[in-house]
Length: 238
Figure (cartoon, rainbow, N blue to C red):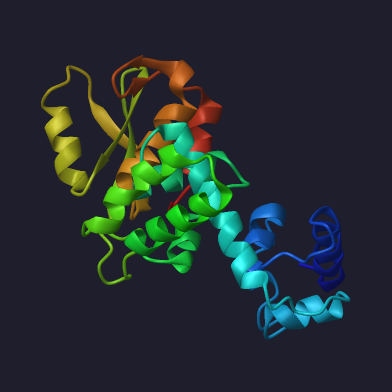
C-alpha cells in the first residue's frame, strides 16, 4: 500500500466529512485501508498520519466516532426489529462494506454499556423511543459480550459437501463425524469439497446460504456452478 495513496484517501474522506478527518475505524470502513497497511510502516499513530495529511488530530474524534458507530447499530436494530446478536453483526458487515465489524462495537463498550450509550444518544436526538425500549432490557441483564478472547473462542467449520450433483452447505464442530453421519443416510457417496474454519459457524453458514439462495434446491442442499464452488474454496477462514 503506497503512503501517498493513504494520505490522498485521508484528504478525500475528510472533504466528504465536512473537513473533519475520519477516525481509524471509520477510515477503514470507508476505504478498505487496514491498520496493518500503515501502522509501524509509515506511522506509529493515526494522529501522525493526519498531521502529515495536513490535519490536526481531532480531540473530539473519539466521541464523533462513537456516535457514528452507534448510528450504524441503530440502523441494524431498526432493520431487524430487535437487538442484534453477534452473528447478525458479522453477517451485516460481510453484506455491507460500510457497516463496522463486530469488534468495532466492543470498543465503544461492552454489550450492556453499548446499550446504555445508545439510549443516551436516542434521548439526545429524540424520536427514537422504539430503540430505547429495545435497548433497556439489555442494560439490566447479564448478556454475552460481542467479543471473546482468543483462548475462549469456539472454533467450528462451515463445510461444502457433494453428493451426486448437489452440494450441501452446513456447519459442525466435528467435521469427520458429520461426513460419516451424512454418508450413512444418503444413497450416493458424499465427499467433503472444502471447509472454512471460523469462530462464528452460525453467521458464516447463514452468509453462504444467503449468497447462494437462488441455487437452493431443498434445505441446505444447493445446485452450484463451478464458479460458485471456486468462490467457496477461496475462503480458508472467516
